[in-house]
Image (cartoon, rainbow, N blue to C red; front, side, top):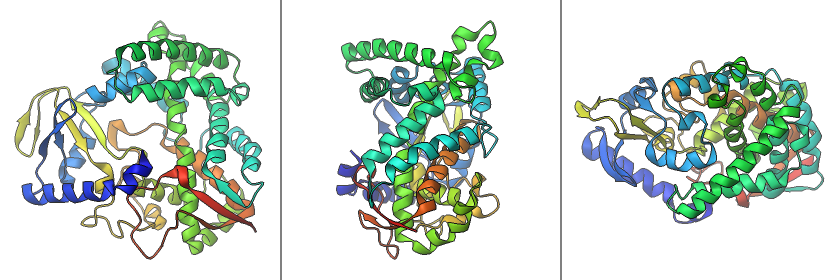
Length: 407
C-alpha cells in the first residue's frame, strides 16, 4: 500500500490540498466529508494546541471508524475504552510501560535480548527488510510475552489475520465474526505465556499489577493490553530500517554517533534524536483522529457531541511555513530544550492521548539501531536518498535494502 501511495505521490498532493484549504479558509477549521460523516480538519496551530490540551473525556480517542477497526484487534485496549475504564487501563499501561521513564526498568533484559537476536541480521554485507522484520518480531514477542514466545509464528499469523480484517472496519460481518473467534484463541495463548513469563516481560508486569488482582480485574484485562503492545512495537522494524537508510545518506551524522554507540549506555540521546526525526518525517500514525463527547467550539463555531476531529499530523510536521528544513533529516532539532513538547511535531501525539509506549518504543528502536552501528557502517541503501534534496513524502520500508561494511 505504501509503495503504491509513494508511486502516486499521495503525500505531496495531500499536503498541497491541505495548504490550499488553509489559504482559502484563513486557517479556520474545515469540515469535510469523511467515511462515516462530517470530519473537522484542524489546520491552524492554535486549534492543534487546543486539540492536545482538551481532556480525553471531552475529546476521546475512540472515534467510530477507529473503534470499528481496533475493536477486533484489541477490544479491551485503551483506545477502545472511555470513562473510568479507560483511565484505569491507561494507568496500567503507563506503569507497565514506564511511560515517564526514558529507560525502562527492564532495559538490561531487553538490551540482552536485542544483543542475542541482532547477529542474525549482520551475517552478510546487505540487510533487507524481511529479515529485519522477523528479528524485530522475535524481540518484541520476548519483550512482551517472554522468551518462550520468541518463535511463535502461529500466534503472529493469527494476529496478522485479525489486523488485516480489522482494516475492513467490520463491514464483512462473517469474516469479522471469524476474526473475533481468532482473537479469543490468540488471547488465550497470550494468557498462557503471561502465566509463565520471566518477571521482566511486559505481560508478567501487567499480570502482577495491583489492579490485575482487584475486584475489577476481569473487566480491566491487564494482560489483554499486550495486544496493543505487540501491534505498536511491530513498528520498530520500519522505523529502524528508515533510520539506517537516512544515516547512510548522512555519513557525518552516522560518524557523530560513534562515541555514543560504542559507549554502551542505554540513554543514547543523539541516536534517539535520529529515530525521532525519522518519525517526524515518516510517522507511524500520520493523522490523529478524535471524537467529541460534549459540545465544543472551534473557530468560534459550536459543534455537537459526536463530531469527528482530525489533526493531519504529518502535514503539520512537514509544514515549511512553521517547521524549518521541514523536508530534511535534521536530528539536532530534537536535542533542543522543549522539543518533546513542541506541538508542531507529534510522532507520539501530546496531552492525554500521548502514547504511553513512547519511551519504550524509542528505546527499542535505538538499541537495535545501535547494535547494527556498533560493528558496521551503513555505506549505502536503496531506495537512494539524496541529502541535498527534499525527502520523499512516503518511504515504503518493504523495499529498503542497506549495504553494511565492517568498522
